Length: 155
Image (cartoon, one colour):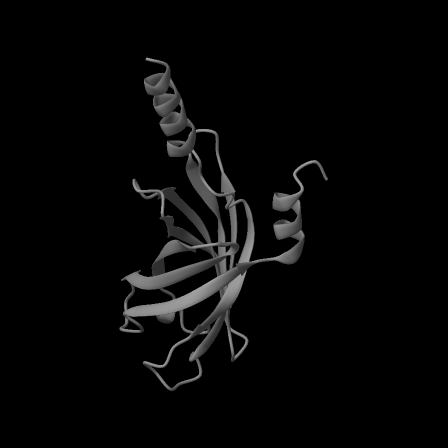
C-alpha cells in the first residue's frame, strides 16, 4: 500500500509539471520558400501563463524591409505537455503599406529536450487575402533577463 501511495503521488506531481513559458522568446524565421523582401523575419513572442493554464500575450514580427506587425495571441499546452500553440487573434499594430499582405499565423512550439530556454516552432498561415507562406520552421530563445528570472524565481 505504501508503494502504491508513493507511485500515485509521484505521478500527480510530475503530470502537473509545466515548463515556465512566461517571458519573451525571440528568434529568426528564415523563409527559404520565398526569395523576396520578406525572406527574413525576427519574431518575438511575449507570453504569460494564467492559473488555469491559458496562454496569452503578443507576437511581433519585424521584416527586413522595416515592415512589422504586432498581434495579440492566445493558446494552450498540448495534452502531452511536450509543447504548446498560440494563435494570432488580431493584428493590433502594423505599418504594412499594403494591408492585403497582413496575415494571421498559428505558432506550434515544442520544448527542446534538456534546454529550458529554447523552443522549436512552426508557423502556419491560417488567414490571408493573398498567398504568402505555408509552413515555416524556426527556433526561439528565451531572452536572457527572462531566462535568469526563471532560474532564480526569488529575484
